[in-house]
Length: 104
Image 1: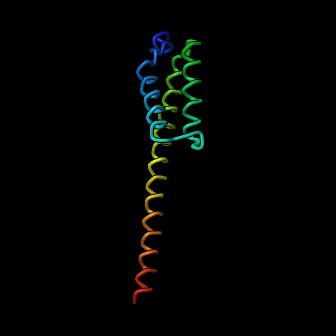
Image 2: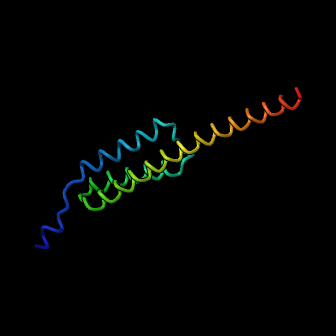
């Protein structure tokens, strides 16, 4: 019974999901400026190393963390993009208010 618990399956699917999440974050303009992306890439690399060393459990945990970090980086990119849009709209509104004040 203990032998079955010790043999974790190869986390092939989790590694694939993690790689996709990192690629998605990169495609959304996440860069090394986002510490979450740096952590995701580091954890993905460590997961591959753990897999190569035969430590499937460690590989799975690192790959899961890589996926979560990549998704967090993606969310931060979206938040930053939305904030930039809000800031731009706020500036435009202020300019319009100034122009309206000059007209009155």
